[in-house]
Image 1: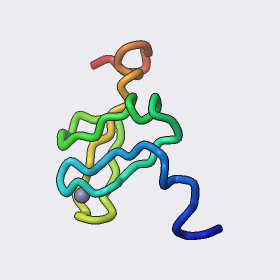
Image 2 (image 1 turned 180 degrees about the vertical axis):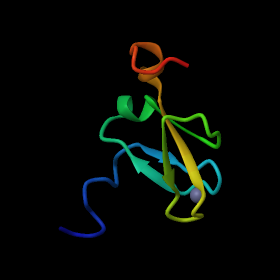
Image 3 (image 1 turned 60 degrees about the horizontal axis):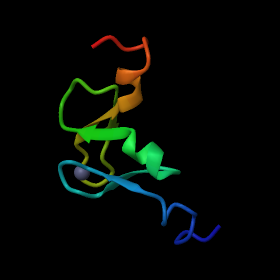
Length: 72
Ligand SMILES: [Zn+2]
């Protein structure tokens, strides 16, 4: 598969809140909109930015509106 065209190029991007580099590609705009990348430590998931190496909090918004899995 071509490194420059792996299908993710046209996907909605979520960017690092620290350095604005591309961190997450979402398959659909809806999925992208359900994600929130933050600098807080109260997120659902934590990933390391591949560029600035800072820890980025990743919150899945629907978890907090429609699911009993998270009580926050
Ligand atoms: Zn970054």
